[in-house]
Length: 126
Image (cartoon, rainbow, N blue to C red; front, side, top):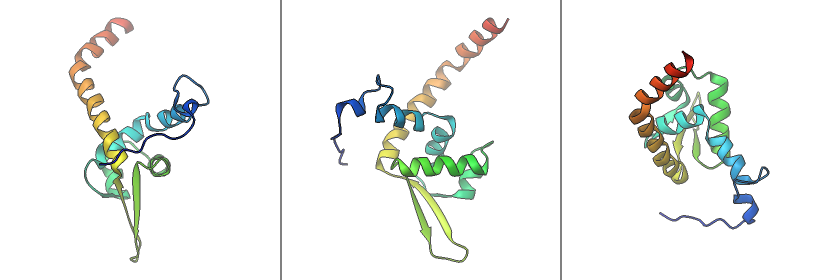
């Protein structure tokens, strides 16, 4: 595995700056649909309809928008097979698989602290 080093301006990688590229990327991938798409793709390749069936509650429009954004950011690869009708498949790229490791940690954190969060919400809402 080869990790490319960032070669742009240091300002582009600074999350503290409102106009940084890093903040834009963070905003793109830190939404519930993107996280779920990355998680469900995992180590497998899925067709659009399979992915939509896996992610309960996602609309056709939201899945399309998030897949396009993930593809634009190089996290998902879209493959169109020249069949009739065309078969389109999605898979994670190497950076997408690396991000999935982080998402797995977030999922583990959620499972570990779910009881605490539920109790805190109940106290707060009372």
